Length: 248
Ligand code: NDP
Image (cartoon, rainbow, N blue to C red):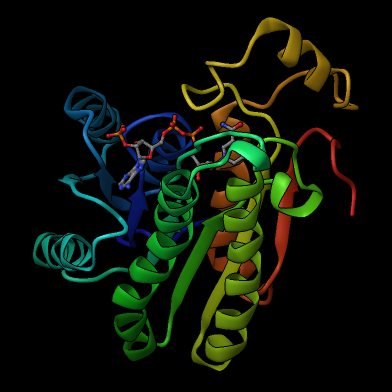
């Protein structure tokens, strides 16, 4: 349960998992600001869905890895809603390649978006949460940050980095009423994974005890739980949401 009137920022809220999170939190009564990188139409559609759920929505086009853009994202949200209680660091990207072929740009782009973006957004909202003595931060990692994955050394490093980041910040702010957790989705059907061949998809599905891929809504359930009022004693954790694929 989220207290009515809470304000959430969901990065990468235009499509996929971020959209499901934005809609889920709005159904719980939160007003939502979503950020996205380039897809205006998708972001407008998410905003419409949030408004249909009876909440307010602001959209912001910008790069989570740009300190200037993140500053504006936070300013726009503060101006619209007066506060930020919840941050979901969801924006993420992939540039898959085998290590022997991986270009420096591919490594940098993924680490920059996934890890540096998480750092910048967290830094930008944290002071307000400390002042309010209440906050919820959920960082979207991945099961490959735990298990590793051939062809995704850059992505797995960024997602493992997010887990270490989550634990460290959780320790720093635990006494201020702020929780910081990660969710680690397994394979979820979105545009991010849409490019994989049927053969690879079937191979992955065979490793999922639940026998199916995850949906964005499966992930949003976990996020809604972690940002809820009742989850205040859970911090520094990584919750895998993967149909049992990676059991810790
Ligand atoms: P999608 O590719 O469907 O959506 C990504 C979203 O992030 C889009 O809204 C996109 O904006 C936004 N985005 C990407 N780069 C940036 C950036 N630099 N600045 C701001 N916004 C950006 O991805 P998913 O929904 O599948 O993934 C969401 C998160 O979940 C990611 O962190 C991903 O790594 C993680 N994850 C996904 C899994 C899966 O199987 N799908 C599994 C495990 C983890 P725009 O729409 O404008 O392009």
